[in-house]
Image (cartoon, rainbow, N blue to C red):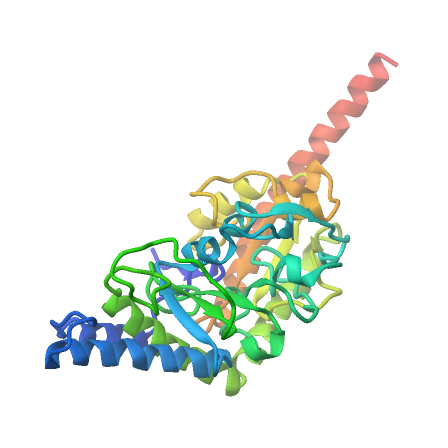
Amino acid sequence: MKRAYLDYNASAPLRPEAKHAMLQAMDCVGNPSSVHSEGRASKAIVERAREQIAQALGAQGADIIFTSGATEAAGLALHGRALRCADVEHEAVRAWCETGLSVDKYGQISVPEPERSAVQLANSETGVLQSLPEGVAVCDMTQAFGKLPVAFNWTGAQMGLISAHKIGGPKGVGALVIKRGTELAAQIKGGGQEMGRRSGTENLVGIAGFGAAAEAAIRDVEQGLWDHIEKLRNILENSIEQISASTIFIGKSRSRLPNTSCIVTEGWKGETQVMQMDLAGLAVSAGSACSSGKVKESRVLQAMGFGASSTGSVLRVSLGPDTRQKDIDWLVESWSKQYKKWADRAMVAKDEQETLNGNFG
């Protein structure tokens, strides 16, 4: 059965450039910490990737510390710091913070004390972008990196979190980006790798893929590919609006990621929609993929003030470089077919309830 992948915010397919770099790195036998020729060759791969990411992220002059992913980077950045965040943040950030920052109905976060706050640049579920105040302690850049022309040095943040597999790199590698001079205590101690801030032999193959993916991702941004993706996203939303006047798109009136559509049809369970689309050959989600495959009510929409009938009815579609118009047409056709069935059942149930109420009125 043919399939269309429309869940890029969960994980992007491996880019050919990343795969090529990884295959080449597999032939390097040396430990990057060794001083012999083989070790130096491996170290050169790590440092090349570090420079590729610094260039792509606009983080020249900052320190880039490789980790096993953005989750570990969050722990490294946030451990021992009394920071506050909002309930719309990723679980990896919320786990270390006091969730006291308020969120309005549009998903915008109020940040009265930037230096004591962790604030995401873009939400993975709604795509809503934040206007970061100067001096934010930690910024989760995971979803924005590689989709928008943003730079770490522009944000004014002290630290930033990024992940390889969100931009077409391999899973299991990420990085913490640090404004030089920011104090940081190592959580994994041992041989003193990564400038003494994250010990352990570097994931050479993963890091090589990360660097190549970052270089390719920023090239896509510079060439305007994501402008085309945004047009496809808008076609999707306009098509669904013509099918269902009651369906809403969270964050549509605010600045969003160009690829993300958070679709809510009140009362129609997001989990049901995901399964129906999966059977039709379409990979979408019911929100963030950060909860080990669990599908539950959207914590992000709850924080924005939506009720239970909406928070359990989220369908997230996130497009990427390989998305084509035919994929959008396929999704609209499949969604429309299931929506009409659901709407018919909902109408019958409503009529039956009204009849029942009339009999006992």
